[in-house]
Image (cartoon, rainbow, N blue to C red; front, side, top):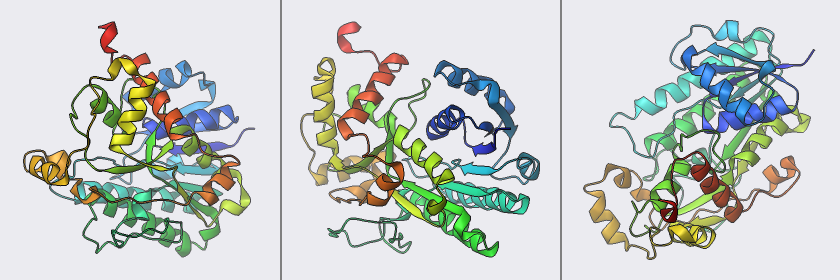
Length: 346
């Protein structure tokens, strides 16, 4: 009998790819959705991606409700907890992000350890590692680093991911199960979409390609392909030595201008839409007075953060997919899903 995995957040970008990896590896996947009416779309999406959905189950779970968690853990050997809110525009009330992230993690891990689940894999973020540090830091960030929540660049999202991961380790320790928790800390996740929802990260590429960003702000992104992140979740679940560890997961850091140039080379039809120049910081700060999305990310201006992915690549068993490859795969899927249309095809 195949082992059963409870996968929270299966309808998300990463959750869908984790489901594909698990089904491909022969597991029974019990995916959680907030409302059961979402399950038909998720099943159809995974089937279209080539998954054997005969081993796919669904349960309704809410990060803010105790209902159903104990039942969802029945006959489950592993928990993959990927569900957590992700935005680029910060809410007026930071608890709108922090409460579901922290409370959801508490509910998921408490239910898992109470029911005797063997290994928990938590999706955290580089947000829990590389904020609140000196802006001129040149040393790469590793799993040994933690975000300092008193730092000036800490947003509600950064705080939500940091507090949620801290909560996970605390709960694991309280059950004496620290060695049975593995945490994946990815940077910005790109790669091929499974449906027509571009989400937050790939949605940024859509904005670049449709001309919504006339000049590139001096913002730098460390990136990783969703397929590598999903495989890391599988490897962290099944590799004995991965327990008790965090895995800082990111490839090289590129500026928004470099990303635009990579897209211009791969997709010349969009060349006129993509930004050709970098905007000076003073201009970005001025525009931020009228644009909440930009205002939420002013702390990123001019700050280059680099990550040492050695441990994650060792767990994966190969080097990460390169930035140009993942960006091309992202845009190819945007086109294939009908989210964007090349200008010459209009």
